[in-house]
Length: 193
Image (tube, rainbow, N blue to C red; front, side, top):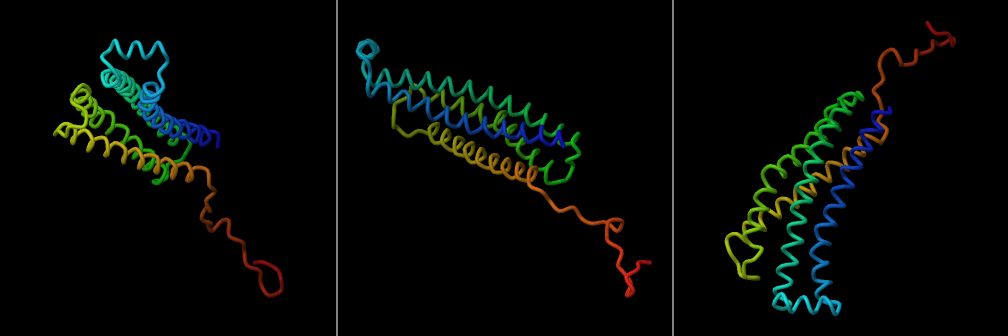
């Protein structure tokens, strides 16, 4: 029972980390726009030194992009470790039913796919777009958003599988009765054979 609690704790940390990272990624970009919308006097001076609002925005968004790239690469590595540890704890805890191991394995598979296939391509394409003309459509821009959309969809799928796994771990399930635990029927005189 304690090992199942450890598995649930690991799963909760994994899901919480995913939600936190999604919030951090969007907030990094929003902070750039907030900073440029209401700059302090010192910031206005620096913006002019950089070449104006648009030049400062490009530089600050590049910095936010680089932060996000580092955060996601590190978080994906942590997810792979959490996934392996979760599967190990589930096996040791005796949670060897197909549903539990499949859900944990699918989550780990998505994390591996993101880390080794999607993130390197998103990083490459993002860096190619960082200092390019804003708003001008290009093949790299289109590919970036396709990869980004696939990544986001897989993130939602992974979260859904994680919630399903969490429910599977914490909700009670009926255990099938065996012949040894079935009550012995009484005879007509009230005595059992």
